[in-house]
Image 1 (cartoon, rainbow, N blue to C red):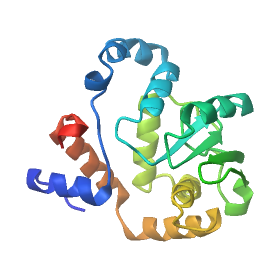
Image 2 (image 1 turned 90 degrees about the vertical axis):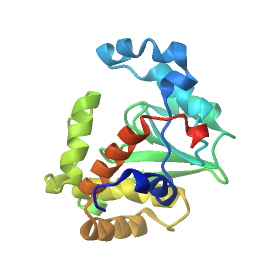
Image 3 (image 1 turned 135 degrees about the horizontal axis):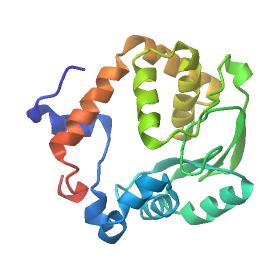
Length: 209
């Protein structure tokens, strides 16, 4: 993908099925204390409200939980609000698979996926508890192919998305497809386009698009 013109932006939204929303429009009081969230690096109340309300009408969701008790909390919170959703045992609020773990999937059926990084020759992300800015920089470097050691970890995460949406029958199949796509496309440029597009929209109210 090349750098987008303003005329291309609406078509990009349709083609990629990506939505943005302005938190201050949907949750003005919550948004007014966002600086506290940033200073303390906390997500809890924001995570609960945004996932529960689902302002962009997503059918699928991946989130994280620290333990099984939190899995049950999110299961009860989200059931009936998404077609299918997955909860990764790792860090609350973050959908990333950083290590061997269990993934709980709910929707048309309930199942538990056991992910072993050794099966995919993937390297564990030891320092996974980044602050938000460091997390973003890591993803930018990863998509720019500057972190070869962690690419297989990226493919596992992509595989979960495909599996959750019913596009593949197994995580292994999704892993192979994601790996193939990553070799063909410049995802760092796609990320830049998304950032450019978000700036152009200025996080416009999604219901006005």
